[in-house]
Image (cartoon, rainbow, N blue to C red; front, side, top):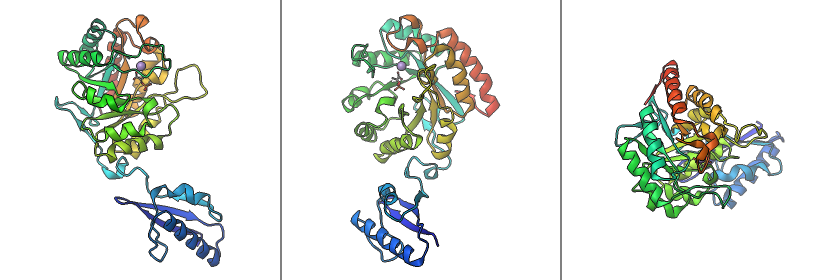
Length: 349
Ligand code: PEP
Ligand code: MN
């Protein structure tokens, strides 16, 4: 016997860990058993007198550095609610207007990076709605790398989003940057967007767990997929099960593009989780002409929705102009997406 099976429990879910021990003599295994039981007790566990010891699920890295432990292998996912096993059939998020995210139909969300003015928003809104966007995006609170860059229109921007969304029959998604904005945004938006920079803002995630509106959670620029799933778990553990994941590019050594869109994240998250998985090829590439091919690739890879930036005059955009599609380009892309979708058994909503 070269392995000890240690069961770890938390209040709601069983969690199992396998520990391999290089000293395979029965004395070595026995010694390790006692060490594990001691660690379990020290962590507030309950020694049940045998191999089974009560641990907290975070124990893996504590066990890993113990003398005599060769390898610790987690045999159950640490994300219990976000994991596929929780709802093997998959989650479909349904909106009051009948739109669904996570079902057979793929939803296109589009709009400017930032809400800049009534004229700008209504001009773009009309064009994207005509081309087939079902959700309008637009930042009212903007996370900018520089404090001197345009920071967004705030509440005024939210009001414009709601008005334009209602006028052109689109739902509205906008980014929430901090807890105090949740209350302010609730009456105006249909989906909260958590940006890449806030993927691990755990206090914000916990608060979003208390609301009853879907949250689109973007992957952080240096986040692993397990970290993304665990951030989704934060929201779900608060009671909000309507989480939508989004790949928006990660930082790599490549400098040609703004970020590297990890298309493989789409089938991986679809396998590991029951939650809808989406892609943002705009931030994922940073380059307008690279957005359509990566949007097509994301659709083919199984994305449940696409999030893209479109501006009627991108050269004058106050943020992210270089990656914003021209409205005609967006309309052409929509036609391509409608041709690709049936090839993988889907439709564009
Ligand atoms: C955005 O959607 O405009 C945005 C800031 O996205 P991200 O958080 O992915 O950078
Ligand atoms: Mn942007």
